[in-house]
Length: 351
Image (tube, rainbow, N blue to C red; front, side, top):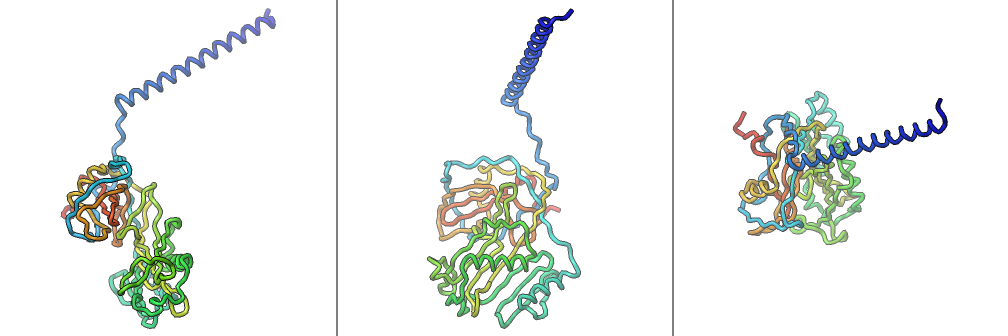
C-alpha cells in the first residue's frame, strides 16, 4: 500500500532522473555545437556559388572619362588598406515601360500644362521636343520612360543674373520636386533624406560655387535614388545625380531654368554574381581600366581616400543595375571600375 512518504520519494526520484536527463541533453547539445563550430573552423562548409541566373552580363556602358591622361595612384584610406568585400553582389534588371499608343497624348497634356503648346518635334520613335519661344525654353521628353531635359539660355538671362525673386533653398527643393513628380511620372524610390541643394554664382557665363546665399544666382537641386541592399547608387557626374534641377530668379517668381531627369526603374528580382576583390579593382584602376567620372585640376598623382561598392546608373538605357567599385580621392576624384568578374561579362563582339 502506497503511503504519503513513498509517493514523495517516488516523485523525488523521478524529478532527479528527469533533471539528469535534461542535463545530459544539454551537455550533448553543447558538445555537438562545439564540435560543429570546431569543424567549421577546421574545414568550413563551402558557400553555395553565386546564382548567375542572367547568364553573361553586357559590358558596362560608361561615358567618356573626364580626362584621358594616364594617372598614378597612391592609397591613403582611413584604415590604411583596401576594404574586404563579399565575394558576390546582387545584380538587378532594370524596368522599361512597353510602348503605348496613348503615351504621346499623355505627354502632350503634361507639357501643355507647363506652357509648351506648340506641336511636338519628333526626335526618335519615343522622344519628342517642345519649344516655348516666349519663355525661351525647350523640353525634350521620352514618352516611354518620362526622362526629360529642360533647357534655356539662363546664364545670360537678366532676371537670373540679378537673382530677381530667387526662392529660398527649401522652396527651390519643393519646386524641383513638384516638376519631377509631375513630368517624371512620380518616381517612388527617391531618398528624400539625400536630396542636396548647391548654391552657385555665375562668372563669365560659367557656374562657380557661391560663398553665401547673398551672392547666389542659381540653386542646384539633386535627387538620389534609395540604396539597394545598403549599397549606394552613383551617377555620371559625382557627387551629383542624373536628376538635377537649376532654380533661378525670374520676372515675377523663381523658376526652373534648366533640368535633367534620367531615372531608371529597378526590378526587385536579382541574381548574385562573383565580384572582384578591392585589390583586383585597384589593379584595374592603375592599368587605366576605369571610368574617371570627376577630377579637378591636372594632378600627376591621385591619393585614394575611400573605396566602396556601389551601383552605377548612367543617362543611357541599360539592361541591369551595374555593380562598380568606386575609388574616391583628392582633387574631387571619382573613378568607377566594373565590379563583376570578367568571366561573367559578355564582350562587345560576342553574340
